[in-house]
Length: 221
Ligand code: HEM
Image (cartoon, rainbow, N blue to C red):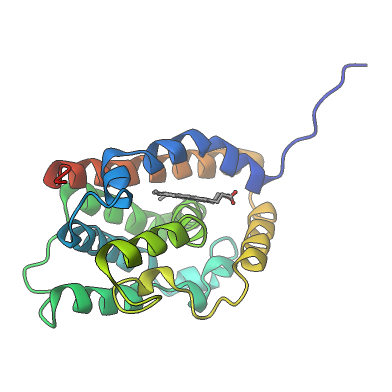
């Protein structure tokens, strides 16, 4: 009899499938320079502004999504980031931070894709949800530490609140439960493959934002 390896769980499959693109995003010129302390706070502010557009799309979703059997269980209030981003942006840009604010073209395309999924394809929305929130709970913590050191924000204070999940006492346990939700996603194998493809698309959309940010903020130091 031929030995066959057991099918990996969905959470493992989606993680493995996006691993290469994760490394790419992590090592993008913009991220490397930002985290290497080679860019000024203006670059960090511009990046945070892009996140605001992305999280508005993730969080300002049709009400039906909360009741959806596929996407609904993922919509946890303790993940919501819009309010935190707005506090960070007020700190970075002053009370008028919103005036004249426009997304980069790549950010607009990313937010639009999220909104399309939120409206028409709950399982696709889950791919975007996973790509952002599980990342924020993981690598986001590295970004916070660097931002505090590089630009002098108070520890877990204004400027880096986006990275602080006050409502999640135990991120490791939260991520474990999140992976269980992924593993139990009530869709068939073909749809799971489509979700994996959408996750790869989500990573590509993130990389496109980094590329445009990198063009606007080449290394300065
Ligand atoms: C410099 C930037 C980044 C750093 C330092 C970083 C670092 C990390 C680390 C340390 C983990 C934990 C891996 C583990 O649990 O073993 C992680 C997980 C993750 N990151 Fe990132 N990351 C970065 C950028 C990104 C970006 C741009 C995205 C996508 C938008 C992303 C999405 C994810 C996801 C989805 C996970 C969860 C993987 C899983 O366990 O299923 N990361 N990251």
